Image (cartoon, rainbow, N blue to C red):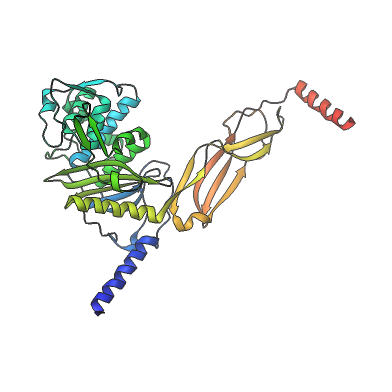
Length: 403
């Protein structure tokens, strides 16, 4: 075999080994603040996944931990990935009761004249919020995005103001929205990092959106209008939950891709891919890397009994301590079996006790490093023993001795 070919083959195998086993990583842990934090990958070198798109980021959805990034704060044109914010504001309005999925949405003259991706709305027709959302999520309909913006705010201008307010609240400091749809406009910019932030907010707090973002094929107008998802990963990537594509001649090819496998939820964002094929290939590289190397390890299940303790001066002698909440940590798969736990119970637990009172803590460690802590709380109320109840207990104990 030619020596150059042999050397190239060996180098390729070594690179694949590094990616598959995630060598030399810092252990990523739970982020209580909700902010995106970074897991160090410096030992593997910059862009070791060979992402061809100009900018990218991979985060774990539940914790917000950054698992991989390349130029993630570079300000670029998002194209129709913009619509994630339009969808987010719509879902928030639905969940708050401001609008409902059954509400009829008219088509304005402005919306009917939108270019780019659309379903060719006519000013004489109305669709429901449900149908509009479906069209936006599946085929990136600009006309429907405009209709939703006008429904929620009265005009696109006011709606864009709401978009920027929400972006600021989410910490999207690289972002300035100029429209609700993403058609190229000077100054309409964001970053892979910011797109990951708003994608996470949408998926974490409005999971019902996945009933739209996971549609591969559907129709509107009694079957007369066919819809095929612009996101090919919905069809060919295991566990894909969405989320949004975008492309223009200036923005090139963008994608926010989300997927869940075995309780691990990932969001991979790629911006300015040279071709549509490359953006999907890059997104797959990001997601594959995450699923190959990391695991979301659940550390607690809310209300599960951890320990039974004695209660002083209570009408009941014993009390179950349960986990206060569901919780978990993000770790490398190779470390999953090495997690140790320490249960710390308060001393001299005495009545009265109210359900939910914190009476202990469970700490979870990996190689001596604290990964997570979860409170243990009282499963129920226990009243303090009265004189009468104390007399009754003593009498019962005495009678039991005589039997």
